[in-house]
Image (cartoon, rainbow, N blue to C red; front, side, top):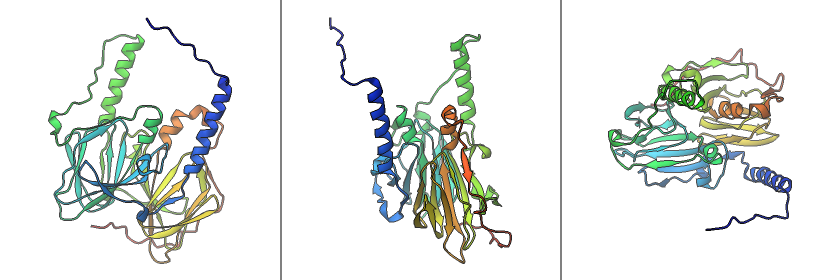
Length: 344
């Protein structure tokens, strides 16, 4: 029979807590990036059968705690392994044509489409064309790792109908706490599974907004996707114009889908071009500019505000969740926006 050992320490819980909090803040400051350039990201062959590179994430030695950003390439004739994970993710198609299978359903995509990958959904990638398909993924894996819930499972090339699924049941009737929990979570998963997976770019409508850009959601709960807070939006900057200066409580990452320009983040200028990722930290004042006098620039903004804000609403309650600098937006009333188009 073993005896319980007594834990002793010369440091109070207060001192331990203060050191821990200080270390978290300091680690974040040391890891802070303003931009990750396309040429910095090395794509390597993976066990899934696709090439992958890491813009932001621990697996690419650029740690982050909320969302990560990866790029993937699928060559013609390739079908990846099938896997699932405990976090949700979204695909932004950059080049080429291909397909994604999500829980046994195939979705064919083109450039600038988005595909939502719900948590625990089995999914694989394929390419039946003659050109390499390239896409970005943004996921909440870092958040799930922080709370101890990050799990991934790869099933090779097993057909979907032979794979295990998540099963829920409404449970017993009654008003006791356990019965209520069973019913509540069963309802949640039924609703979650019925969310929108594929958003075609041609189904979206671009409108000029008060920040001075032409924009649209590309994936969001507004469009019917049942995300945990992940959202993508395209912001088009008119030739030689800019976006209103602002800041907000959550991170915002902007993938340069097309064009060139620069951003000013807390008074630091960073120049960007197609394929770069601009990293805006929480509460950082920022503004984005189109440096080309003739061509439209397209930035795809991704963040996970809704989920994080909802979980931390008590902490954030006294704060203004977004601030804008008055009169910092451009006059776009005379801009003739070109017809929107995407690559084939």
